[in-house]
Figure 1: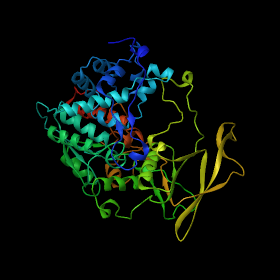
Figure 2: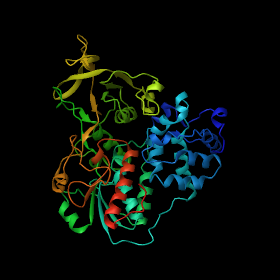
Figure 3: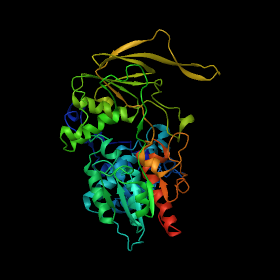
Figure 4: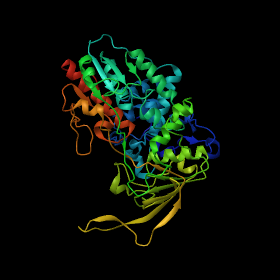
Length: 483
């Protein structure tokens, strides 16, 4: 490494944010990039630790110490080449990845990891600014055609890798725009969508064909794709949300989080209300909002509700409040369970832990309140600890809008999966081993959330890349694509 003592001499410094009162007025990103001189110093903190545990935390196998060293030495273009050799879309992960690499960093033992995510984002942003990122054309075509169903991060990564191997991939997307979860699930204040548009333009130049408003199984049959293409890749998401099965669930004002977030993203894209909300607008303006679910989707609902001008926002999590700091001896270098406060929480939100919803209360068909109960760990019938209701802890909270952000249980089982004839695993995901990504139906592969279940964007990119390598080997007998 360029400066083995850098971690002793330089304090950790990360990107800053606009003030909450300012950023709540806009849907734009509000992160302040670090100056180049500061980034050089932050990269110098990478400590030549001998065993780069950050590698164990990175699903796409980024060569983190290498690009840190290159940034420290001011070799930005070479750093970009290194980064793009493992990650097709660093501008996505540099904004929305929770950075498990930083949790695995050796310096995280003292709660001062290298700012890996910030450095990664700076490398790719500089690459776009300098014009270093251009289409990577295959020198010759193979004549093989591949249909990729789903344009989220897994489908996009798979298609781009296949195009660079010389195949002719076509990406089919049921929505009106390309991007899947990246486009419609993630708010613009976390990732602006022009980032997707420029990648799509690059992929089109590389030979990827995109088809929107094409729901496979409805618009066109699976058999037609198998007739027209050598291989079909199922790269859809885990879109079947976990529901809240309580009395009163049918009341108006209780919605799945993704229905709420998609509408706002469509408005931000310029759609009128008829296109953005064909079944009726979901607005948090002036309402008492309750978000059920403590993950990233719940946080996105909080930030969106505050930008709508909600009267109040409360977030419930069924699990007890985790510790503010993890026990390093028990967790490092694995991802720790600890209390995390997002930028959306900082903008205004009440958080309550160990709370379960018992029923929704309303009148005239509209929700007005939730009846909840507190939970605690207690021995179950088999002696194991389990969450139990605390006797006498029932309470009510005013709620004009309830957003269900409790995760997703599986891909949707619909005409597409039925016509594909694939088998599912015990969780309802498409059965396909990580060794070759082949489903139980000949010439059909699967990757991403549709195969592994609800997960991170960075895991979807990894699966898309690995699936492309498996498809290439299947078509050509061997593959030079990286796995």
